Image (cartoon, rainbow, N blue to C red; front, side, top):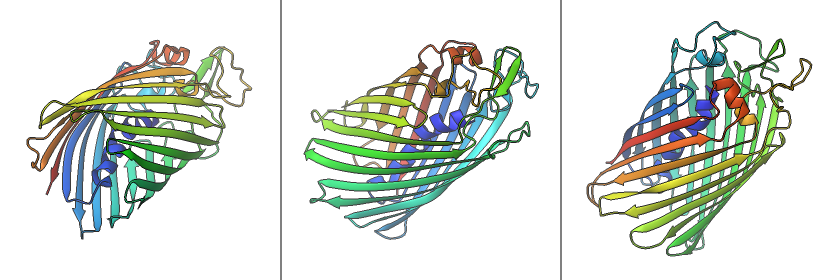
Length: 373
């Protein structure tokens, strides 16, 4: 379920969780439910819970728990959904389910000029176990008009495929990332942030189940065992009026697989009254193909690498979402947030071959209640 981990969890778990303590240290708790459903018969229901507790005015500890109930898990998608699974003999219509448990533990320190946070993350499911550590530091400068930050994370995951196949070079997947950021307040109504990221991966980096079926031979996906990339991003916030704001972000990514991508996000928010804020957001993503990815039908049995996952090919994707924020009163201890997003890829031969449809369409939602003690 690496697709779900990368796409769904990255968007819906880590970002909201980190924002919980990013601005200040407060006693708080939250409960929520996230959902994901796409045209490839993948459905995920994810209840979430978090608890943040201050030990002093400068120190906080926190815990978050996420449980993903997944339909069409790895064993079901071992083969193309349009045919019986030739690897494990399962039919795509049988609807195997899987549960994934993902707790996160953290500690944060803040003294007005310095903010340090760190912790570790665990994840376990039927055929994939993950663990990661993270550490972040932010320094306020220039009378708090400038902030400089650095973040480091490292994961060490293990594959346990239900087919019991031997993975080469090994059954591990390690990923690391360093973020360096500078945030500058331009005016009382505008700020901008620049971020440079260094990313690296090693181990078994493809799916353990995807395979290329062609000309009388079948080959499991095989990628290079290492990957290194760089990303450059700019993010901004502008208050247009007392009721309106716009958030924007652009990110460029490139790596040694020759994949390069551009991501553009724009979000407009409007405060309808003292209780309700809502808006609209759009996201556009485009990428080039990996240097080892070939057009389907052109592979030979002696090729060193094989790829069927559309994320190694050239494609575009689009996202349209509506966020909601509701607070009963300015002094209320409760805050309700929700969102609904529609996602779609461009037509893609790899998607057509594997999933039966020319593109992937998905809808994902979030609903969360925050409470400050």
